[in-house]
Image (cartoon, rainbow, N blue to C red; front, top):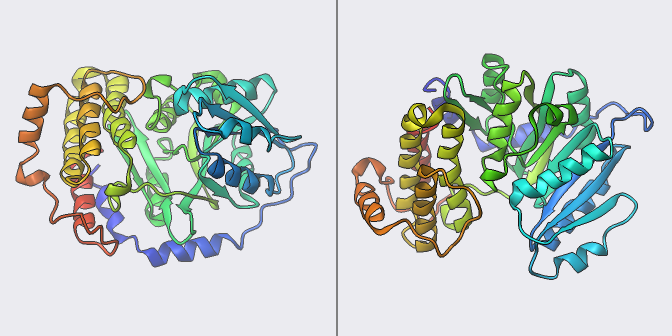
Length: 384
């Protein structure tokens, strides 16, 4: 893994902006309405009607000729359902789940609907994403080039489109390898070096229906987060390829735990701290995953030490690490805590100098400083 991570330091914001401008000049070939594969676009809503509405509006402006939209309301407690009913129509339908089944459970409802209606592809799209007019045409064209392509993702950028946040990645169970990058040049190098170990994230993941028939739906034990990493690994293990379409881009609300940790909500910290170790245990077994689990723990304790003003997020990390070790699944409960004795031991261990950021992250200076130091430390300590 050491040959992968350090190269990310070469990324510059200017390079990302240049590539985004470059991509917007590309136009996919026209697709015949009658021969175009049917795509079901699945969006999960949970107490966030405004975001979902904006995403749907951008989707309906796309030029792809043959798609339908399915919104899954995942047990919202606000007025989302009544508002969502008002935006349904010829191409948009709504499924109302009486309870929150997690991102995985919600997506699986959509996947099952897609199979029942004969869709050839399912596009799992985050409801806080905004799409460009030609993105789905480009994604489907990429997938249609090779029947072995199981998953396709566009590049992901910030909502304002100024910077790429995901350009590609690699996931290899055989080599105990996991990493992702925002640098398109590095992503291309990894794709050439590991053509059968591509990583696709779930922000805007196009799924071939045949892949679902081969490997099943998303693993609901993850509930949310890391289910996309798991699905990429399962896809590759089944002989499919996971690719990034470098000609398309989706803009998405950024959740950057390295540069803006104080803006991240506690549930994110819980699921990520829990599910990374659960992922490795699932694919490698307890004994072989211990080193990776330990490295992951150290990485999250670095974040723990940057969250001094966010006790709820610190508690979420601790209970996430605890539940990951116990291989516990299910929904985050903000009232749960790591037991007292393990918590005291972990807090004491977290004081080690190697787990401290270079300086306080309280100012969250986007120009660098402590954030960059934290990112470099994380690259050196996890995903290896």
